Image (cartoon, rainbow, N blue to C red; front, side):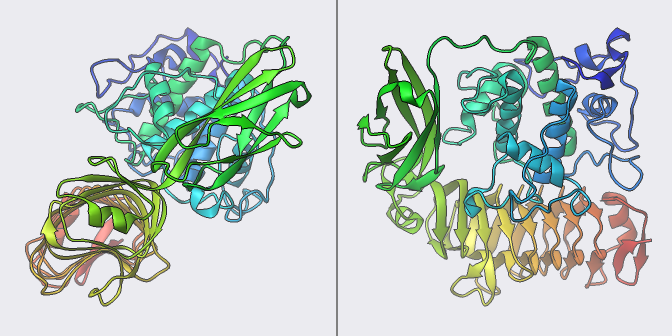
Length: 565
């Protein structure tokens, strides 16, 4: 069901689709709906997603970046606020009608009107139809509009939007249908069912190595391909073309009051619809006490098992109606805690799981934890929408990997200042796909000064609101790549030679500070920083650094710093 904004594009000559990063299966060909694209931006040439960016602009789903819309910012990360606007426009264009306005007071961190925050009304609209939800960390009260969107989260947002287009509902999700396990690296992710569903209909693809990378951040040009493939699939399937036939059998819907909870805790399930026709309800699942459920005015209290393993758990309610028909409803809960992937042991606390782990073990973490967490053995710690208040202290070991956490810096023994990751005498440490958030103080990644050699790869993380995103003291050997440093006093401070490549520095007081000779600074993007790069050694040719990196605006050398002209 194409929106009116498509105009005559359907009768124009069809342009070739965008080449996929994966050879099989090939992504949906969006040229069927995009045709001969007309719109363009001055910064998208060469992007693998250029065609879909232009198509999305033809459909009126994007207007480019302020102030004049001539640029699109293809490699900028998509925020949750921007995502809401992309998807709300997609739904409204496809349905050829506006969404209901929603509750302007739904979230405590989203203003009521677009005059106060440009994406506010679209967030409220999608919340009203349950395409977006509040954050787990805030019990659903906050939306975090400026937080970045991961590839896993994006799959869930788009599948909910397609389900809404199909039948006006997202619970249960109706379209696309469930798909087979498509990728090896999303096991345990709450977004895995939605990733598999979209992969099954060729809306999403993996990378050349076969992984999906659910924790990687979505770029604005990638977002265009996600949205336009979803649009093309919806149109080919005819979603929403016909109202679903009236049901002749009784039916109910089931919602729960908790997405995650500790083992042994109880949750409530609310049944709506033909509740008066219910004869009985049973519940089953690996994490719940199986058996009959007692309904009180359509509400049931369900207990989880004390010994439930940490991680996702599917809970199935079987409803039997008075006419002996049955209906099953499955909800997914997350049991908070830590699960050792190698030993199979589950722990309520993350520190206990790490202390009991053998060298080389992988630990999956779910829920919220208090730090600091101490690591002194080679382990991999994978967070699944996990939060840590207080930071990680990693010392006297090698081979530690930490991914998938939202971390608030805290006091770590020996650090001398609040930090999210504090490294002492370590090697082969990888800090990947984490979100570090501060309030103007603290450091994201910090190594000991004089504590020994600290070798680490810091990749694909987001550092926001900190005193320093990363601080390499003289004994550091840091490779800093693919990260976003946004709104910090200093993005990356380097008193040791570091490799700093492919990062994005936005609205920092200082993007990169070079306090030691020998750093490699290439392929980074700078926008809105007071000082983009400052050389405190007098050993760098700043004109060479300008040529080796990308700047949103024209820049000049001012003293020892690169600044906007």
